[in-house]
Amino acid sequence: DSRGTLRYANVNEPRFDHDPLTGESKGLLIEEARENLFPDTTMFTGGAWSATNTQARPNYGISPDGKFNSVGLIRTSVAQAQLIQDAFGLSGTWCASVYAKSIASGNLVFNVGGATVLFDMTSLTTTTISGTSSDEFMKSVGNGWYHCGFTFTGSGVSSQMQLQAWTTSMSVWDDRYDAGDDIQGVELFGPQLEEASFTTSHIPSKPNFTSRSGAATYHDENGILRTAPAD
Image (cartoon, rainbow, N blue to C red; front, side, top):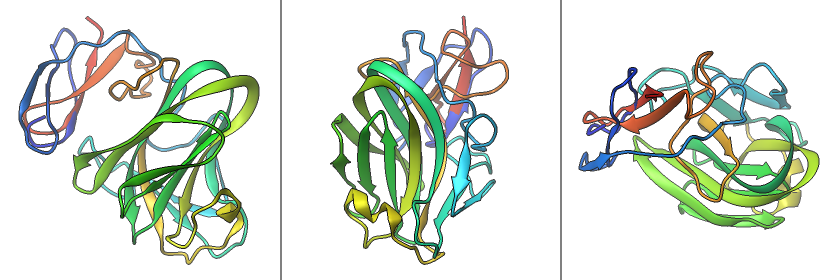
């Protein structure tokens, strides 16, 4: 909405989108039906989500939808790969995205479908550090949050999707085994995996919302991300 918050709309309510930073109206938001493969877009629990040698703190802070429901991912002092992960077997063209906010200058690494992208939350740059990706982006949505994502081609082989918190000293894929400082990390909200060539607005994983045929989101006039069910 115009205040930069991700809003959820009621049934039959049109989505009038806004720039989350300036509040400027962007008009009626119309998007095609899409499905988000991630089973939980807020708490990162259930299904194949798990945390390995990391602190995954639920309800860490205020997410882009204005609720106290982000997850804080803190890199610990254990010298092993540390991540929240899920497993998918993907083929064809896909888009992966998530909302991220730095904790103590920590950075985000997003790995899925054989592509690994480092999102530097200080320099606001993206670097593909493993595999092949395209159309990488970091879009500010206010309050230190960035919508981060990229496009990739899946091989059809089941592989883990990984969201990792990296410290500022880490820059190449082999650094995933390095120890952290129990301080730096990232806040996360709204992971999304869509079978398409471009990313669309957030599709929440509430019990009655599984795809854009059942729900969709937009920024309302107050800057909040809202959800609009189908029709």
